[in-house]
Amino acid sequence: KSPAKFRVQFQHADALFRAGRCAEAAKGFEKTSKLAPPDFRVMINWGHALECNQQWDEAVVKYRAAAGIERSAHALSLIGKVRAVQNRNPEAEQAFTEAIQADPNFDMTYTFRGAMYLKGGDVVRAKVDFQKALAINPNNQFAQQGLNHSSANRN
Image (tube, rainbow, N blue to C red; front, side, top):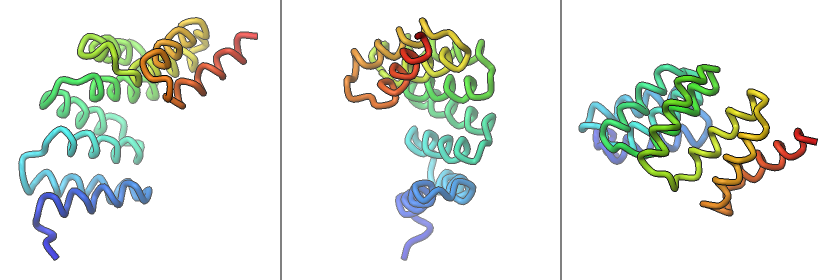
């Protein structure tokens, strides 16, 4: 009924993203950003939609904008995750370091960094990071899967 309202447009874009319609969701978040100054949540979700659409550099731009709004381990670790996917590990390491400085208790930073280490064959460092993530959040299924995988690769 009210497509020009910020909340309605945000929810529509979010629904598109959850339905796997990443390109449409990214356009929806762009529309949302024109209705009011985008907040942290809009920038993070916009970045997720771009990342889902494999628009890596554009996703990083949105995550950096989110970190500019609210310097959080969440946004910074997402930058690291994307850079790791791109095999830009020095940039990923820098983002993970900044994320840990922002909040050393954000478990996903260690999960993402552990995944990067595991992908690069550094099983020992991967295992340490997955264990750190699980010490912070024992319910982190991604860290548990990574730890299981790193333990299987070590044998």
